[in-house]
Image (cartoon, rainbow, N blue to C red):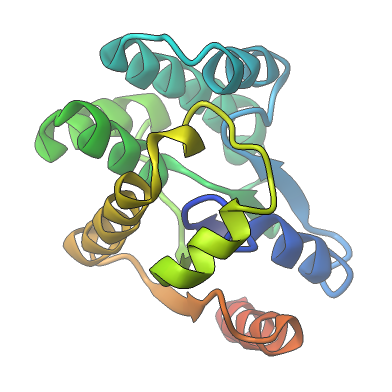
Amino acid sequence: MYVVFEGIDTVGKSTQIARLRERFDDCVLTREPGGTALGKKIRTILLDEGNIHPRSEALLFLADRAEHTERIIRPNLERLILSDRSFISGIAYAHVHEKIAVDMLLQLNRFATDGIFPDTVILFRIDRETLSARLGQKSGDAIEKRGIDYMLEVQKTMGELVDLLDIDHLVVDAADPLETITETIYQHIKERL
């Protein structure tokens, strides 16, 4: 089962994946971008450069996604895959940043993933106040430096995409206690295995 954790930066995706790894000891852990050797190079370019044209940025994400799908996702579809991000955030960031049409982005992502979409999505939501506090505790990467309004618009778009594509999903409040979130996600996944 292919499970993706979606949400903007600081919502706790990585923390929850690490916690759930302890409960699902045979799962495959991965992330986009950066789940493959090529993906690690692309991730460095995307997060450190900061001056990439938006269309080039979108295409780099697609290159990572195609490699990730073929090297990590497809070979492990019979196992439980926990992925930090997927095409959903890729589309949301590209749509909000460059105003690329969602239909075009969906077509490109269907090509990049060869039509392999997640079985379920864990969608984290965060309010402005909590996001502001969390961002204030870290130095931001190139994408985080686009600001809170940008990030909240990306979050909104992620929710719209999950609804548009009618993908099974669980919405999680990122401000809830860690253990509550972990247990809720654990039950959601366990019921679907």
